[in-house]
Image (tube, rainbow, N blue to C red; front, side):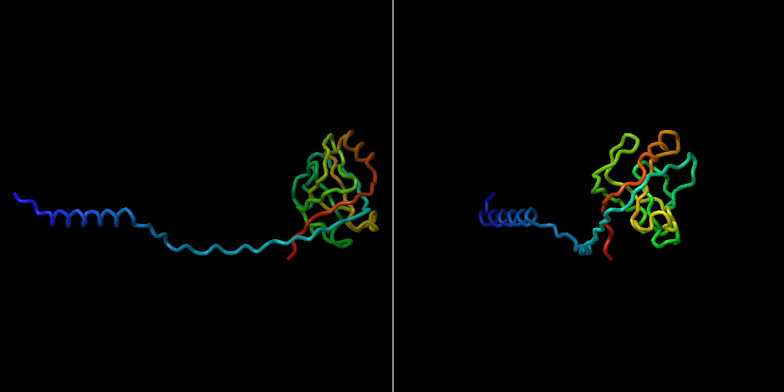
Length: 168
């Protein structure tokens, strides 16, 4: 059998070309939808200075707060938005976290806290603290001798604090 070098070279080149095409083939990803651009959220910083703060307790089994959230250490009540207004429309929105500046923190039942969550409203007619529109009432726990005593001892104190609200 006579070997035809030309046929072998042509076959080898064809095989090499097929292998090159197979292994150098790139996968093309299907086109993807562009991700929607996120709009940045802006916030306003609000600051309240020289506002009266007080402390309160609730009896065990008391109805939930005005926001329907259960009471907890670290919760506060604030005025309604307008004197005599709805207890469901607070001057600082429910769920807002306020941060103390002066004093830097307070201690409630052994916990030193500097941030509090608005969950309740109080002084609906602004009758007691009308000259302090951003009055804050700290929750000192379930009413019992020691919690009531601590709330009474807290009394009325001036505070400075701030909070953030989304800018729309």
